[in-house]
Length: 357
Image 1: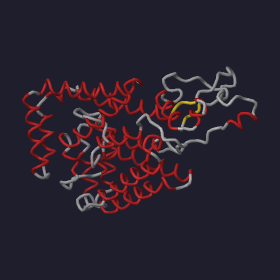
Image 2 (image 1 turned 60 degrees about the horizontal axis):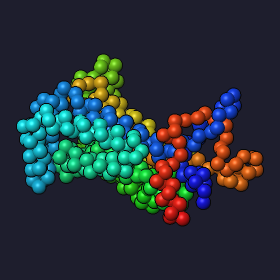
Image 3 (image 1 turned 90 degrees about the vertical axis):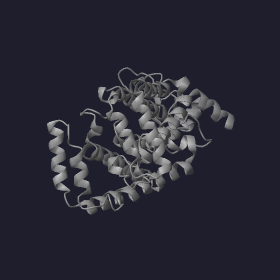
Image 4 (image 1 turned 30 degrees about the vertical axis):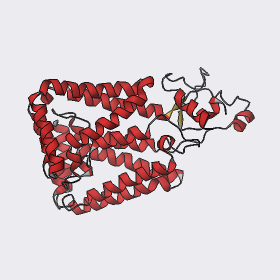
């Protein structure tokens, strides 16, 4: 099979034709674009780690809070890590920030994307334990509205789904390219079912749980955002159970979306993105990016990025259709040229796909 045919087998985003310039069309590899978005989030994490507040004792105290409510076998390494960081704060925080910047740059630079994605999974798992206390899973504090059971886990999940490898079949969405259709569906369903479970735990469905969570994020935010959050907190006051039920129902619908026809699947993905944006605004205060002390953008942007990895691919034009149109199969249609680092699949992926066939 030719390289051009291999390109058409995988999800890509086609830029609309430019009828005036008649510029050759470019099929932007969806996975590469999503990898660059993931790289951008890691770079943002690294920049946030360099904030002055991260060089104060507030940072190791925040790490130590992850031990609360966890079993001793989980809590002791967290406390040790927080103490060690407190004794070497400037050096270690600088190293932590540099690691995240290097992860972002490594993912953005094609020759190092595999190494950086693998390293990001290892780093994410370490942070999930030592920095987030396993996201509150064992302590009963995990709340999807507050990035539970750990935003850093979503980094690891996305990294696996965007791994530059291809199964020998036409993937219906980007996530299925690296892990296969069945595994991609299982990961999606397990993730969203866990979100539904955690949002319905007794602590999270308490009458004032939703209102208190929103109100607790208001401090330090600009006036317009604080006002929106006060209004939202007032709206859901005493309605914790209703909020949890609505969110759980939405999560279940989103989980089922990967088994639905294309149009219905896209609708559930839009729902996932809307919920991610709503959660990010009201429950996470835009990740605290407008206030001092945010260490990451929280789960909102990551949930949206995760949804995009499952966005159904548009049917690729096959060679017969191209021939009927009088155009070579690999010529494309007139369009606006895009950046070369986005166009086409990874060379290694094409080679692997050809070898597999």
